[in-house]
Image 1 (cartoon, rainbow, N blue to C red):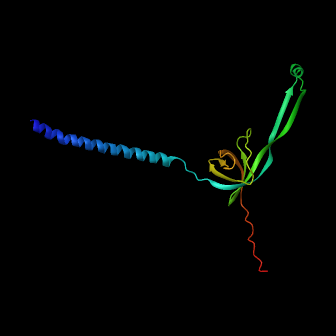
Image 2 (spheres, rainbow, N blue to C red; image 1 turned 30 degrees about the vertical axis):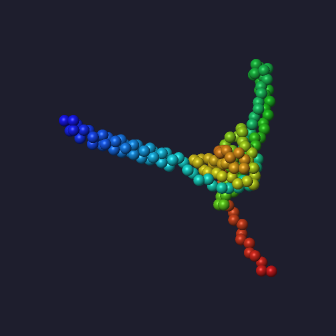
Image 3 (spheres, rainbow, N blue to C red; image 1 turned 90 degrees about the vertical axis):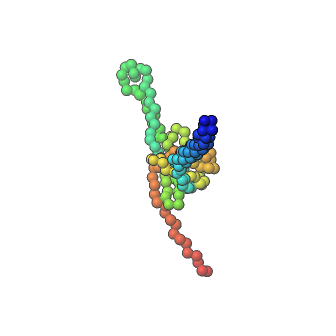
Length: 162
């Protein structure tokens, strides 16, 4: 009986070791596929390169500061003084090999000053242009595209044979 017991459990033990090894392989394979899926799901959008040609200050609205005096409020008179000031926004010209973009910072209150003449990397995501300049601080900043125009190619120059 003892021999039978060993003969039954002996192969079962080795099968269990084999089954455990097989389950470990399955778990490792599943983890590898899950990791590969997560890496593939990450958005790998390639950056395009362009040159920041210039920055212009453009009008982006008016700011009104109004104040009513206490007597004007009590008596109901319209003796109110208003100060209007034109608001200026930064507008950059970003030139790529095919398109010229005019862009404005999305954050009007704290716009970053970008270095003109430097190469910038950008990508377009949904309705905004995400720009980063390696020479500055390499942060991604959101910009609004004001206009786009195809780049005007310079006419090819012919070499003189003189």
